[in-house]
Image (tube, rainbow, N blue to C red; front, side, top):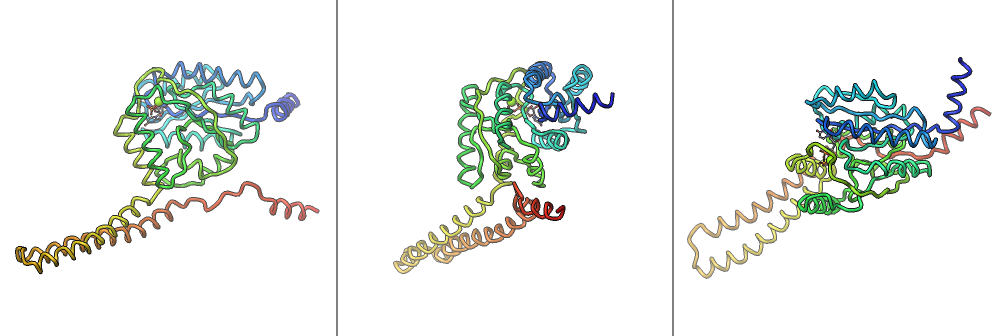
Length: 339
Ligand code: UDP
Ligand code: MG
């Protein structure tokens, strides 16, 4: 019995050692879940049969405080299928936290983690391609959508504008990639070192580094159910993305302050000329000068304070200063110690 187990383990290590966990955040997804389970387990079994991944690979559903039957369904599927498993939040904590929790739970158990939405908008057929890229040695594989045909005109335009603004603000992002991606175990480990509370994973992943590549797919309509990202949530998310990554808005305020002071100086000339010419009401000149110059000075002062707040902001995030990919030094020292 024992030797059989050992053999199974060794076989696993040699043949298909890479364990894949697919993390799926779910918030009120009872309508789509049965189909998602069929699709994802189908893909996983296909990969296991082809011996690309270990048979210990799993689909991990993260129930993000759903108020419908989602958790009951997850539990039912967990009993039915060996490869399905789940965790349940005590309440709704949001998509990004659900993704992070799934990765945190699965990290030590998995060689690679794929995150995908529950609604089957992201093409599951890209999963084998992502795994192939992982086996080729990539640590990060982004799922990038080829087109935005299935989005409304409004969503398409706002998304485009958002990527444009983010780029201007110095936030690196892979355009048209959402939270559908593969991360190797070490990439996940590095990502989890980013301790910030305001999560914006699609901006954080590129910061982690390592070899990365893209896999392209066509994004479909939601299979069933309604979007859990109404406009208000989307705007909040975009705002979160900007404010948790960039202090560029503070610099804009500074520039505005300087501009207003300059305008103030020009205005001062104009106001003085008016005064000398004498066609002004008494009190107008001093009032106008005060408004312009003080306005500019105030904006500059606020942005200077903002600079310091920005510094505090980046300190409290306690992001790792670097991630070491390979370390020959320690390796050599340990080899020498053994000799
Ligand atoms: N989601 C979540 N918590 C939330 C909102 C959404 O876990 O508070 C999940 C949702 O179940 C889905 C994914 O996040 O799996 C993306 O949401 P959705 O498809 O509604 O967003 P959209 O594609 O419309 O932007
Ligand atoms: Mg969706």
